[in-house]
Length: 351
Image: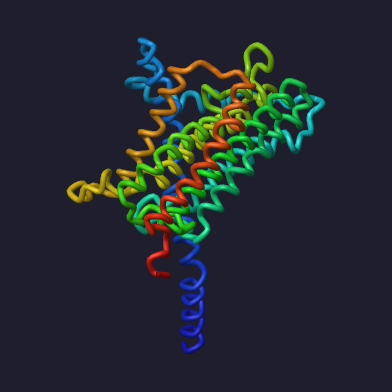
């Protein structure tokens, strides 16, 4: 009986020490990933409905009530198609590229605080983690363009890589400006840090730059230059079919949601009620978080329905000759204003 008691206590200790924390982490991940995948699927539906409303047509309406089952039908259709790999392609890299693109768009959510105290990994360098993951997204697109062994796909991959690298510079300087006002790389601290209204006004130009750069970073209209009907057809994914194509497609929409979440955390107060109205705090934080993300995504869709596509030279000029000098200048201006008003984080304590 003593040996049985000892074994039970031993295995109970193993469960409490190792297995239970692991199960909690897996449950937390599933609780975040499953709604994200559903939201990503229905973002395609929302985009088609919003564009249809702006163009005075119906959009999806036949599959299920109000066309609500259209994303499911699209997914089943792509699952049923044959995966075709070009004979001259590097098979391993060709298949890995869309998987890498999709996985990176999910991995980045590990540090996004969805509500107060609800984040998978509340690390102190969350901003750097996000910046690193978003930078790695270039590799999936370059791999796809090279592995296809097609000149059109290769040129589309190069254009996309140049575009993403160009606008990451502006995004990095925008992040520096936000960090100057909060003094922390932790995303939860950035949300909860109290900022005077004049600081939010000071950050507003960077908010505009960030949203425009997010459109370019995710290859969304009017910056969808990696694809071009007249010269590159579909761009880097022109040789893809079936679920390999679907993973690129889903990765793009997941990156849209990720950029909208970053905009919400950095500039829109995260899960906090808008304008700091205490009466609105009865609504759960994740509801406000989802509502703010939905607003930013609507702006993305609205932009696609409104603006024509840029030429590639216009895209590069905007990134290197306008956004880069402006963001550099605004970092200096922000630091100067904060220093003048003794509002730099930690400054009052040091004085």
